[in-house]
Image 1 (tube, rainbow, N blue to C red):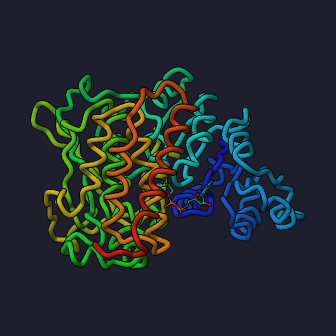
Image 2: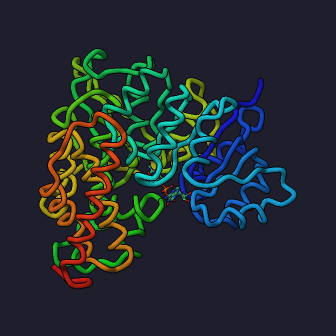
Length: 397
Ligand code: NAD
Ligand code: MG
């Protein structure tokens, strides 16, 4: 078997590290072609020492000479910036691209891989949320294979017929039951939510993840982004998706068919399972994940999400219904607000307010090009920053 060449965008992150863990278990199947990081030169250098890729990309251009020094003697060539990311995503030698950059920064490199018809493993949900129909049209037009890494979407994918891509209606699916952990503040009161600190928001009870997605998970914006992601991936609407808070995070989502059957995918909360599923697809490969012990778990719980305490989920559904660039605006405002919360410039409960005000201010326009998406993303970032500045630092609500 000739090993497949894999580019890992966002290699130093939580998903990137788990991806490399799975890849390292299968040297006969996978070979690392390129790795990227934003600014962590040392961490990227260490990964290059271990995986010996052809290229390493540092997206922050000012760190290129440092990266060159760190790579001395490894044989790995250093590249930088968005152009470097696009080159290693689109290279004719690449078979598979793991899109694991966080946020809007991942959109252009992910699209470059799609436009070359690659097998794209999508963790970077923000890219799909922002560009929606344009992204999915490119997948079809260029014959790319898009495999979801988000545990919920990978679960849904596994519960659907294994043709690719699959539309829910054609497959006899009536509903998607999208599970959510509820995050670390599931039972917190409004007053308690207003006081939470970044480190508390980033201490997820079940999953170990990057800081941005951890905050999204705590506000339920992550579930909102996932609702939009599911609508695009499985060609459906929010009316056909029901969110279930399932605090154990063992059932990763479910699919209901018209005959009443409900199929679920279960597993330990370990991202190496969906990553291995996508890397090996359509074959099953070892992920290094411990067996599930249902006797130990004993019971599962389900609750409805509380949209009063967690308005972000409602805002995401509204943005999807508003259509056009509204989801891109939602995403951009959320990125700015989450960053401000992480820097302790706004309260946790202000995040959704910033998103709501930005959505109300910017009228959506049709997504007919990436330039339109980028322009609206920029406008939303500016407006969200103004909303944040217009209120005093850490004002408690
Ligand atoms: P992370 O913060 O741990 O890692 C992010 C990676 O992206 C790092 O390698 C970082 O260097 C790189 N990066 C950050 N900013 C960048 C920029 N401006 N330009 C280029 N590269 C940049 O994040 P993560 O938890 O690994 O999440 C990555 C993506 O996967 C996110 O979109 C997240 O929503 C999604 N995801 C993560 C998990 C999880 O369990 N961590 C689960 C599902 C989906
Ligand atoms: Mg998820």
